[in-house]
Length: 349
Image (tube, rainbow, N blue to C red; front, side, top):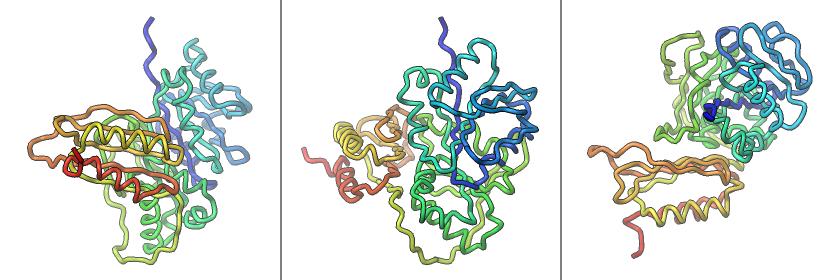
């Protein structure tokens, strides 16, 4: 019996009022050929456009003429996902990917872990990316007053800024600096009035074990639907240094060195994950292993981690080990010293 191909899943999160539903509505309006199952978990808020999706309530699933499916989760997420898969297997539903919109007050951690801890879901579904919308007008206040807002930013593979037209250039620069301090790994995009082309946030394969690594990338993508590759350009900001006054408990740390010893870096990762994994939201590394021509890729969420070899280093490249950890109240200096001790030049024989 042939195992079904894994279906990609996009988790869309962001604090209340950040514009998640508006972004989904734009997707459905402009890409009617997409076959997407949408799981909406935004209780008490204005839902996805009824004119686009039809009437729905409870866990009833409705297949629409444009190929989209929507349900509002009322029970256990795991069971709702399995129910969708069973209906797809039975030919009752036809969709090619899942889009899960979390409630604005939710920490995305339990949702993300759902796709790793259940055997059936792990086999059938593949996380594509965690997308977090940020309300530029109110983000500073939300990040200061609500820990969950910081967590939503920390887990993100891509940050989509909304309402940028409501703040001035200095406020924009200050917000970008704060977001980068929390998450230096996520690419930042702008959605203008909820409009952003699909390729900027759908099908980006952020959980693939590849060696892409863009730190502090800040770009804006075209808002118009296009068959061409997404055209990113720098998002304008002032270069004037601004005073910072935040004290977020989640920050991103970049560890860098040259070649590392495979046994020492393995022991470092194992110990760090065992001791601090519950507070390590996301982490990714490109490791230069002594004597190994290929890059070793590491990527994880909390205590769920994967390793795989990537492309070979070229003769022109500097063999450099780079590890980014986004975590809450981590002992940064201890981790940094232990990480540096794995370098070949620092290893004690």
